[in-house]
Structure formats: structure tokens, C-alpha cells
Length: 230
Ligand code: DX5
Ligand code: ZN
Image (tube, rainbow, N blue to C red; front, side, top):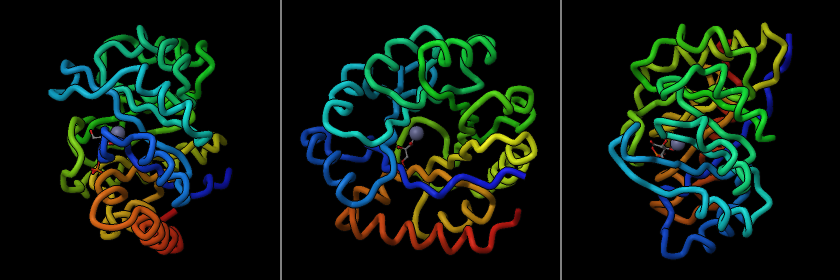
């Protein structure tokens, strides 16, 4: 059995002050973030609009942290090269988006980026089962995609556990990412279920200094992982 990857925290820049993004990036890095999560929204796949490759490139120019680019867009295949050129390390696309997931995986790999596949809360695990052995990350959404600051949906946790088990079985040291409503109160449950990569928006950037917020989140995920259900 392949051991799970180490636990990592990825602050989501959607909750940062866009007027001082460079400072937010630096503060996340100084606070010990393991990666940065960037939420791309096109107003079609989700009702909200956020930003595109130019902003990813601006962040890339200011940090060496891995950039985890979450594509909440209808046509992920069309934009894979652009987000890779902008500096994305992992490009995470939604299985519910347009196109055959196998072709999107191929396009992302062809761009040189690592591949993540995301599933929205109402999407059953079975939708990604056939391709799970071909990806570097499975992102389980624990809110409806589109906005930060929503409440965590615990009913998605069984998908986290299935993803973890299936990845370990397949011998791939891929991450299981949990995204949405991750707080000190919910992070431990996600870690216990098998998550290894924790996207944190409001819980990282709001309500206190980011270093303190990340330290609390890290303590919570480590405690959860000790009681993991694997
Ligand atoms: C929601 C995004 C999330 C969001 C998380 O559609 O995918 O990454 O930024 O924000 P919080 O942690 O505040 O729920
Ligand atoms: Zn996200």
C-alpha cells in the first residue's frame, strides 16, 4: 500500500484582498503555506467570475510556492496551455465540465502541468472512478463551487475516504484535496476521512493573522489524521 502524501495547507487567494495581492501572497508564504490555491471562474460553469491567466502569472512572479489552479470553467481543455504558461503547477478541472475527462487529462499532461480532477458536492464518486488512476489529485468540493465563505457539507466525506482508499490501492501517491468551508472545526473531520490537501479561504485570510490561522488549521488536520479511518 502506498503511503498517503504529507498533509498540506493551501490558502485560497479568493479570500485575500485583491487590492494587495502581492502582500497576501507573501504573508501566506511567510505563514508556512504549502501551496496557493487559485480559483478560476468563468460565469458559465459557476455563476461567479474571478480571474484568468494574467493574474496567475502575476502570482507566479511573486512566489515559488506550488500553484494549485482550480478551473471552475466550462471548457478546461481549451485553456490548459494558457494556465500552464501562466505558471500553474497543478491544473484541477471539474468532471462535470464539457469534454471527455480523458481528453482533458491528456491536454493538461501535454501542457506539462500535474492533473487534478474535481467533483461538485452532488456528483457521485462513480463519475471519476474510471480515471482516478490517471490523476495527481482528486479534489472533493465540500461547498457548491462559486463562492468562498460557505458552510462545509459533511455529506461529501465518504467520497474523500473512497478516493483515499482507491488511490492507495492503485499505488499512486496522489492528493485528496478538500475545498470549501474548511475551518478549524471541519478540517479534522476531513483529515480523518483521508484528505491530504486542505484548501482554506476565509479561515486562512480572515479573522486574525494568517500565521496564527494556519497554525491552528495545521494542528487540527494533524490531530484528525492521527485518528484517520484508513
Ligand atoms: C469555492 C472555491 C474555494 C473557496 C474556498 O468555489 O473553490 O476554493 O475559495 O473558500 P472557503 O475556504 O472560504 O470556503
Ligand atoms: Zn477552489
